Image (cartoon, rainbow, N blue to C red; front, side, top):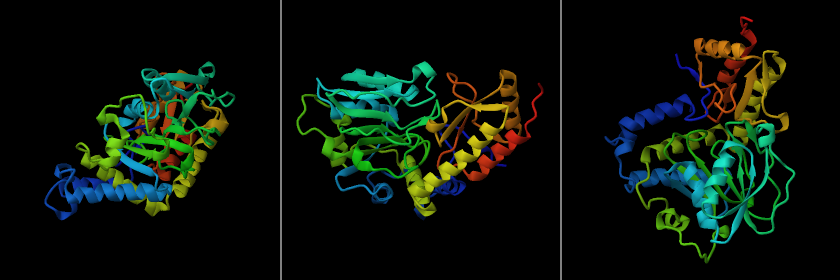
Length: 356
């Protein structure tokens, strides 16, 4: 029996995508070769990456001046690559401290430029997104972590600013429609909503790339390098790109990003309703900033928490334990999570009778 996997990443994918990916790992399109052994420059793989790019463009309705890049290295690499490409040696960027991944972004950017931390939610243990702050006049862009997976908070409305947004969307990429013109760079690694670990999708608004900069960007980290080479400057991990393609096809077949958003709202609403109703549990994030993808909650005592974790394990629910700095539980409900799994978890919460 397949388990209900609420892991924050690598995350569950639809069973049909796993099956298609498994088949291609053995024999890709009846070629007698595995997708993992086909050259990244072979016509068969070029078709794969071009279709994946085309689907990202279609789903987000990207204008022509946006480029879609497929890069190894994970989203954490982009925390440094984005400021490297957008900022001169004396430029600055701004960020709101919303939690773990915002802090990672601050540390990475500070190695390259001045960073204005506009506000922090640390005083309330990152249970909300700070919204009362002033933007410095010299900031070239505002970095946002669209969804903080560890603390379970999410931007449901992005800040209205007159500079580009650079967004780490690793955990909510392809989960809702976007007004992409507000963004300079969007990046997301693929182990949550649209594939398996090993590839990062980067959307580059070429209008924000500096024409002349006093910063010498190494060739390997220069967005222009990968734009000019159509993401084939070096060996792209072919299998993760192929699995991303399968997920993109699946997302389109389900109805696109609006339907992904509808499903996310429906799944998270079902779970949050039970969290708020059940006296054994309580939510961690303030309601208006709750993530629809990572529901973080806790039990009324450590004893109840350990008993519920064991109860979940006995009933085929895995990956629900919260991050060590937050504790409690975290139920991640990305695009590939079926409503039936959320219904199963909610029913377990209803049936659970701890020994108090």
